[in-house]
Image (cartoon, rainbow, N blue to C red):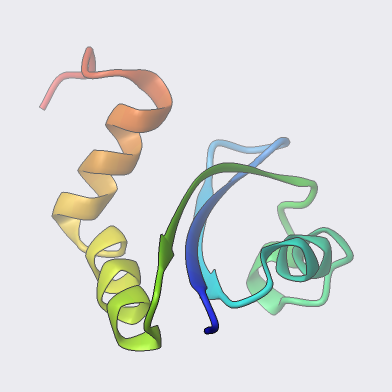
Length: 87
């Protein structure tokens, strides 16, 4: 059975993150670091800072959308810098 991975990348050159999903995480991160994605090309190199695995594409898409929401961005901020930022 295919597995789908929702991942969060962090740029090594700028304080910026990228959220995506794939069924082949190694290939996808490599593509981001080779500049094959229009948005991520500008901020490479990238490092993966978080990932979650799902058994269906629908679940992965739902989680990716969450990470792109305001609540999801707060989750990412806490993940990366802790909960010590002013709100």
